[in-house]
Image (cartoon, rainbow over all chains, first blue to last red; front, side, top):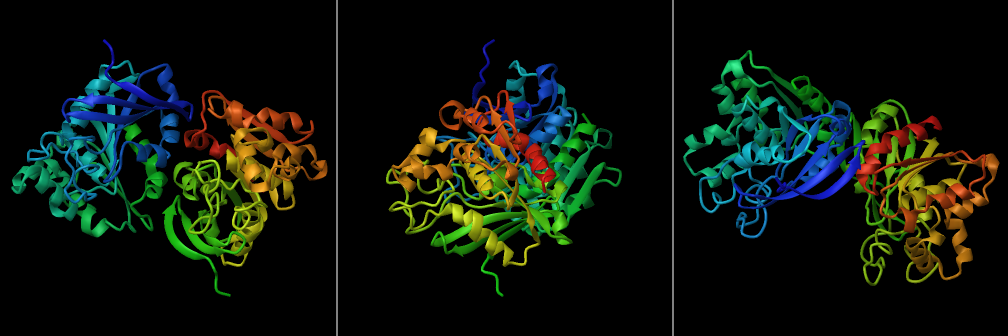
Length: 283
Length: 283
């Protein structure tokens, strides 16, 4: 079968390959681009797959160029998949005011039910189902029985909800400065209202705090959260304590607070090695 | 004395501080911005200073956000200074066609003698004299008796000529994919003709190959060059063999060719740890 993935760039990095692909997405009804790092070990054997979800305003490229993660992925033998953060292209609606926190670059990893978003903004299904299926149908050397997921800010929220809802797929979850309770912060309530409607009952399945309150202990996916204490969004948007308080006492939730670090990629770069090491222990 | 350096951002990174300053430059006759990474060791003791020079089109930010160098600088206890690549701002002339390889973003680390460039394009004096003097007059914890210099492409050329001409200041030189003989490649001849005039005799002091041919063995500054063999500019612009052939046999010039690597920051990130370790052995 001919692959539907079109390789658009390939660059050597830490003895592995930093790849970028374009493809048609059926669930998003648009053309999409994603990045994939294959470590040197992938030359001889299928490697575990770690999915990275980026935050507001990002594309697939921010993490790839700024986090310095390839060094650790090469040492650990991990592939890193970095999807885009929303559907893209002509015909895909954006926020009318082009706000950075709604529409393009701000898909929030949910399946929208409301107009005008529902026709394209199905990022949950894209990340959980369509993109992995496309990769399985390619000849890329990936071991889909060993997967983890992590992300930053909006993407930390995405990693938490996707990992918590799919414990059979993801062995561990990582998050940098995640939105842990989108139903209780301005970024989240704005996006969920637009994508899912006014009724907040429909938001629960997209809210990590609600999911962890309802989770099945037998299937608990280990979580590591890193949070900078100088993060400008900590108190108004991120509120990690809401997740810490909601998690059952026995839940394997590891929280690391870092004095002086902000919300930027300088923070992510400083701890991405520890995050990948954590995820790797569960793969 | 009040510092003339204005701190415009400070971000924690690998337990150190990624700083950005603005200041008035007398020699460039414009306002400038530079970046400085201070490792955690700088809290208690002055640290060696490594200057990084970027390539065409870059500002002070590319290396800082893409190379992943802070991790190694933090481990080794090195400060990294990243200046801009040309004068900037209103009144500073650019190439009439806004070409990427002349004018803004393309100062080539020379002192221009020709109109309209000479009034602002004095990047050699800026990097070698004015910027270090500004730093010495600040209260930053830097040990100016231990300095090295490295760079990429046009900045590799800059590191080579600045290091070779100032062996008393720089203990070692590093270069990724440098232009080693600007008098013998299209990028170099275009820039040197514009900045220095048609007479190529005036180019010699700005040409690493010419400098190494004439160098004093007693003052030889050790050099490490890393070059990707899939670099799209290797044959037409970079030509490292011209430097290897010109260097006296006993010169401490270490050349590493890397199969499959291109000209990008993925290449730089892959070997910046080895470059910094090399520079550090001479500090």
